[in-house]
Image (cartoon, rainbow, N blue to C red; front, top):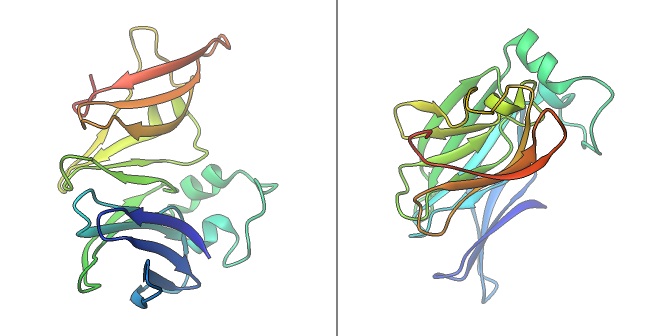
Length: 197
């Protein structure tokens, strides 16, 4: 079992077990919402603020040595393998009422492990490139249903060699906060807006 997310309004918990995306209500009523494809590894789920959509990122299993259990960082460079072999992650969005997959957006040369709907607009999904090189400019992305927008670029004291991590929406959906280190080792907490500014 993994990747638990909770819709507090309906009292429904969503999680992955094997290839099944499951939904369980507080009274114990459970159902299989959807089945994920074979040869894919999953990551962290997220339910939209209105409870109508569930986002589940998956990645070509080759990125993580097939369907083995990943226990910490492996002895090979995941990003290097993903880049060299042009492996693909998918941003999958499911209807929480019907289980229908309403979006399956491929993202080539990326291992996506974190996704998060905007708290005010379920059309905006914040996502990451996990353990990527040049994390200062490759880590944080926004998908608006049509375009993939890089959220951090070089310039004004920012570098591709910075380390960025743990991005998340502010509650009002107006900005994204994250933390990391500049190339000189100084830690920081950053803020970026959905338009990348």
